Structure formats: C-alpha cells, structure tokens
Image 1: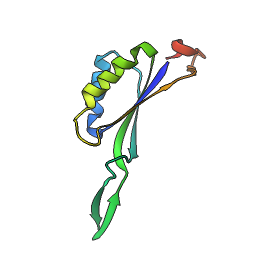
Image 2: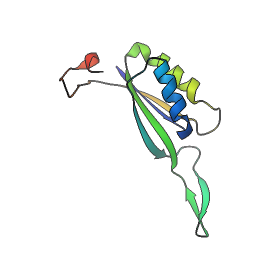
Image 3: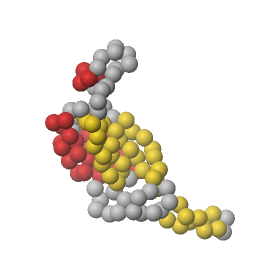
Image 4: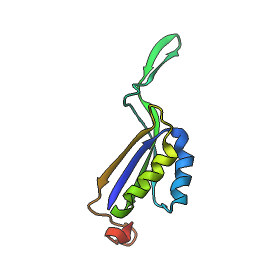
Length: 112
C-alpha cells in the first residue's frame, strides 16, 4: 500500500475532490495547511507596516491506495490541479507499512 499526499492550491479543493470521486477514489483526508516553497510568499501592508507573508495557504489531500493504483491516482491529481504556474503544489508518495481499522480491528488492505 502507498499513501499519496498532494498539496495543492486552495481553489483546487472542489475540482480535485470531484475528480477523485469520479475516478472511484472514495477514501481521502483533506486538511487546510500553510507552507512555503519557491514562491517565498508575498508582501502586504498591515497598519502601515510592510509584512512578508511567507506561509502560503494550501490544501493537503492524503489518499491511501493499493500500489497498482498509484499512477492512475497521480494522473487524476495532475489533470485536476495543474495550472502551469508556480505554486501548483507537490505530490509525495510513500509506503504504508500497516493499516488498522479502529472499529473492527481489521488490518492491511481490508482496513482501507
């Protein structure tokens, strides 16, 4: 099993969620996050003082899937989230050693 973590623009929340549902991905965790990358934020003025805002709001999707579905899910994320501009986000793919469903105690793929 793999976990796919996609960090995308906030305005991509609904389009990406709908694209994932349409592709048959039903289990996901979505979080509002802040971070910085090559964008390094922007300058704003607060009460006449210049403030550098270097933590950019993003949305994080975490999806646990079987290894053979990783490429398909990544393609869905790319198609729904890519604008071609700096700040589109990143996708991280990691191994999942074990999954346990709290309610039943099931383990492994049965718990997903």
